[in-house]
Length: 64
Image (cartoon, rainbow, N blue to C red; front, side, top):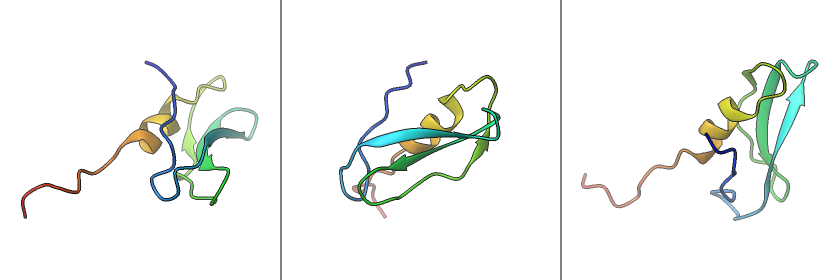
């Protein structure tokens, strides 16, 4: 799995992963507007769980 982060869905800013509690939790946040994912459990400083959340997008043009 690639850990490339998409731009912020709100402002288009750059995103970064932030590790917490000795690398056991991770979140992704926008350095421009501060939007972030929730903190999710991880192992060994692996950003994948938060990257998956951050990169998920909803299509706006789905039929109602």
